[in-house]
Image 1: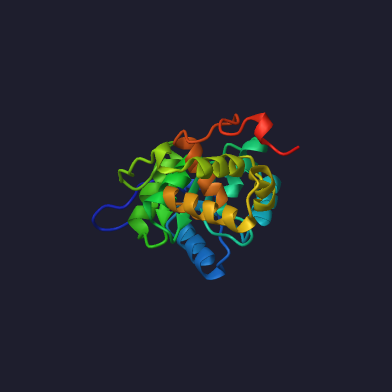
Image 2 (image 1 turned 90 degrees about the horizontal axis):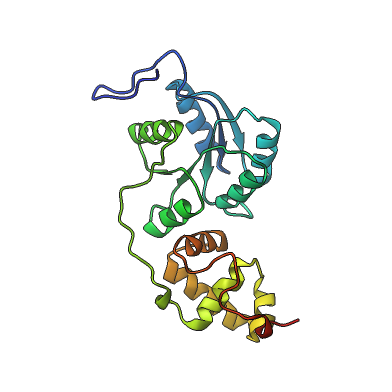
Length: 230
């Protein structure tokens, strides 16, 4: 069994803690340094790297033996949480630990809501890295010990709730304008207000958190069919 750090530091064992880890991060210096640390400390037996979601999906499809994904939250073009629907649709029950420079409670809540198994700030040290990887490798979840403030549906105006529902359906701003008969500027203002209310940074985080809080569901609950444009 792999042993972890005590007061004297990390003790290595013969077998790595996790067999094969994929690091998804667009900063080579950080990604390579993290990979070297994982190998050196016997936290991983093999490391692969991906710089964006396309590369991550290719690696995951080509290497079914990947045991764990360490995922940067902010990637080029799409946020890192967009990998979660791919894993689900591809039938890949691979645990994911998000490693992010953002440590606010809204980010952590969005990560949890997306179905990620662990969260690790980029400011973390080796001991915290070991604790999180060990917990997730055992099938547990590992998140900062915080008590996030509750978000009430009443915190959103009726119009913001409508915009949120349409965001959850994947509609772009221009289509939301047509459905609600609003200007694009007004829609952007509502989207920004929803993000601020939920403490998130992009649509993926917004929808994931809103679902977990019961603000939206898979069924259309705000707009009736006769309120929609054809």
